[in-house]
Amino acid sequence: MIFHDLKKMGILGINNRVGRYILRHNKRENYPLVDNKVLTAERAEAWGIATPENYLIVENYGSLKHLHLKLLNFESFVIKPAKGSQGNGIIVIKEIIKEEKNGEIRVLCRRSNDKLMDVEEVKHHISGILSGLYSLSGQSDTAIIQAKIDKHPIFDDYSYGGIPDIRVIVYEGFPVMSMVRLPTKNSDGKANLHQGAIGAGLNLSNGFTNNAVIRNQVIDVHPDTGHKLSGLRLPFWREILELSARCYDMVELGYLGADIVLTPDHGPILLELNARPGLGIQIANLDGLVPRLEKIRLEAPKNLMAKERVDYSMSNF
Image (tube, rainbow, N blue to C red):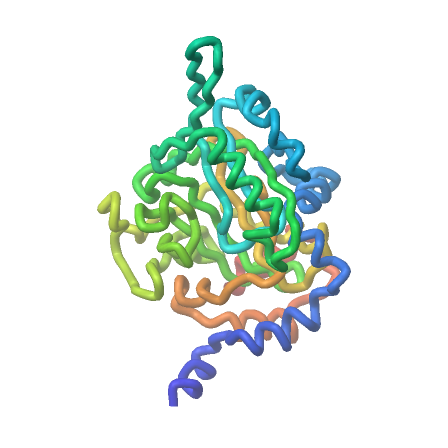
């Protein structure tokens, strides 16, 4: 009975997502463009799409020897695996502390949760990234030292510690569903639903939040800030949707998830792309993906520009 009800609601399941949409619309040769964040950033730069600045790319263990000296050039940064997923392996450093004693320099890194890490601990973490500890395939990986993005003030009452991001599901270049992921104390300040962040559904027509969940449980207020979650309207909404629509043209994947962050000074920028976006966005919106995907497949005009595809989505969803 439950499967019949889910089908009636238009809920997209894992098998249907893979068989009907991912395998049919995502060419395997294009996967590296989204599975490797270094390649994504390079392609985005060529397309004029803004991404966080990559300070350093650490490709081998030998690069770790003098890493602490290079880190002193930055006030803050983010460490992430190039081929990681679900937020695993990401560490946010919000402050570098330099201590000098008896002619020796000690470097400490303050994380977003205020915990201190010795630079040797940071090197050990990066060593784990290089070994493939957090990579999709378990094979050796590359570590990215990336600029830390400041939180847009619109999220001051809606986020604990970290930076919220906006996930947009894009099908054949049309945005079909979106949510904003809001960090919590339980998620360690990360915008990751698996680790306890909030998923708040967004109306494609206007960028207003419509529902919010934590681990599939509907909630009304942020557990840490106490602020009511309904009624938040994201600025730059049309720009967010146009950016996500352009990602389809950029990597030529027919079914993808675009993760976008709002910056205080530069509006929306692309954080990363996902060729296998999760299905929790349906719970966040209390709505199924299937009717929207099928409407685009069967009814949407072909060969439209990104702006025209966004017009269609904002009018129909």
